[in-house]
Image (tube, rainbow, N blue to C red; front, side, top):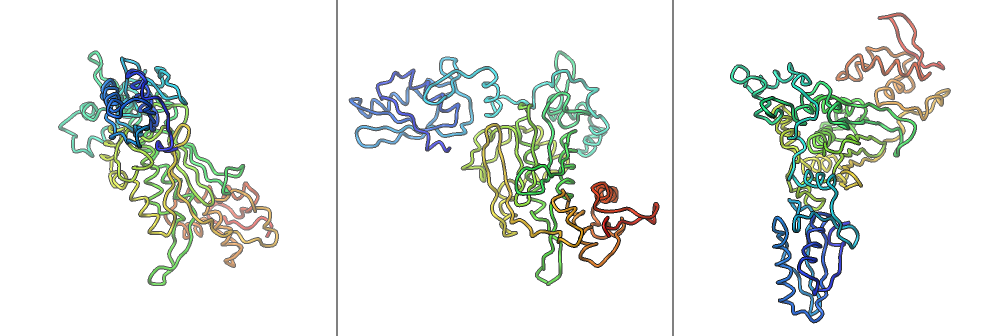
Length: 444
């Protein structure tokens, strides 16, 4: 619900302290509109009370000019996504329905992180030492920066905020273990991506899943591989009437959503990871944590803000700068260039979701005699092509080399696993030995 639709009504005679508490509570929530019923209170007096209440907030609450409606109503707007967490007389309040209640320590810390007043990535990773970092990777990073020979690897990480000096000892920050840790999830639970390709338009029992963990750069690369392996491919005619293969979504747009999620999610939320779900008609990337700082659904295209500036900087240093630089507007442009709907953005109960929508492709496996055995089975696009090769292409057999010609950019081991999986599902039968082996339909 947008803040314009959230309206609380109070009498203008309310005390300045109570008015300040309500304004602060709304500012620490999702904003809203406070409707002051003037009654016998002169308009100027009501405006003075609003100004005094705003000054009572710590820091000062700067609001749009209140709107006067006739002689009886004054509307005070508290925008959503304000850049600070506000207090009144040392108390941090939250708007709960039509009441103000104090924020718990955990809620306050979460809000401070969301608003950028406290940085989780800059905190020392609890229990982590220098031995928990992958120093060969740190050295590669230092060489990429051109710092090798001029600075020690430790000095590079200290400069970037991946290490902190605590009582004379260098210790990794949360950003440090996320970017360079041997096992980041030991210290930041939930720092992973769950990638799933579902067979239909909704979650179901037929799917292909991969759990992606490790340092954030590795997560991005492995998520990109998952996208390349599981996004469907179609053939279209270009301007020169040449046939060209095309993914169901622009790869740059899909990749950008993953990079943004990894870069900007709230890592202090450790009960959940990033979810990359691909369906027959849409894909979605869901990140733990709401929109950061002043970013809202209304200004998401224009506003730029990162809750994880260290992570963003290091990923940029590593060569992800193009992907980080595109932003939401780039994703929108890529989708529109392909004639696809604009992305859909939504705040969920505990996170943020971006969806790319697509028209479902026609059924790619044509039923043939005896082929009903694999209808409804989870098949990735490469496996579907292998079956079309046998059912529609006029071929009686397929080899690893045949599939490699169809997918020259896919690693041979991935293609070998694809064919082995079709054998395990009872769709194909493997014949021959070693280099002379080939596959046929099980019922042929």
